[in-house]
Length: 210
Figure 1 (cartoon, rainbow, N blue to C red):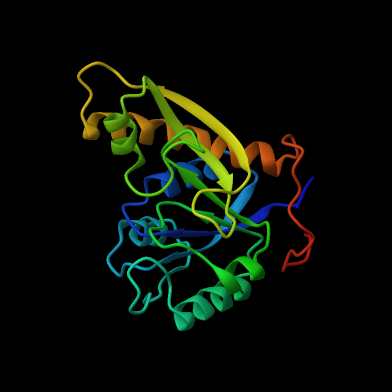
Figure 2 (cartoon, rainbow, N blue to C red):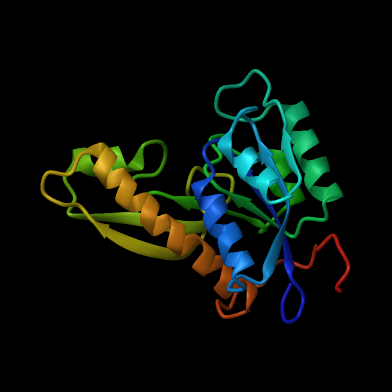
């Protein structure tokens, strides 16, 4: 959605929710023309759910099922239904630790975005900051990208570099990458929402223009 319309975001996360909070603050201060319609977590006690509830945003735990790295079919169907019921335009992954496949990506084709803690295509997958440190690179960073059927292989929307400092540990490097994420993610969403990125959400919006 462009122009005077505001995107309805659905946010999926598994952890503390620091990127969600950064996005919510950007909405609150008017720099991101959007609203969060629903927050979903696969972890019942996740901090992201508490952050959403404190802001009066609908928040749901949906049990992921028996798989370790992805949603089972029932959880996937429940998530799709919840997002559609909330009239979500764009699905924003904020520390969601499960791979989305199949029916979910078909239901929100071109409308799922993620942030990854490396300069993709380098170091996809888990613990990208540790991969970077172990490999010995001098610069890493974070990447906002669309989600496709691969693992961290979708089209890149924006990146920000983070230097690897002498004496860095996995914890110190990860912390600086997270700081970069908390500025890059809302900035990228804001440029996209304002039509400055050249990208358009596919015409599948589920709620009427206001």
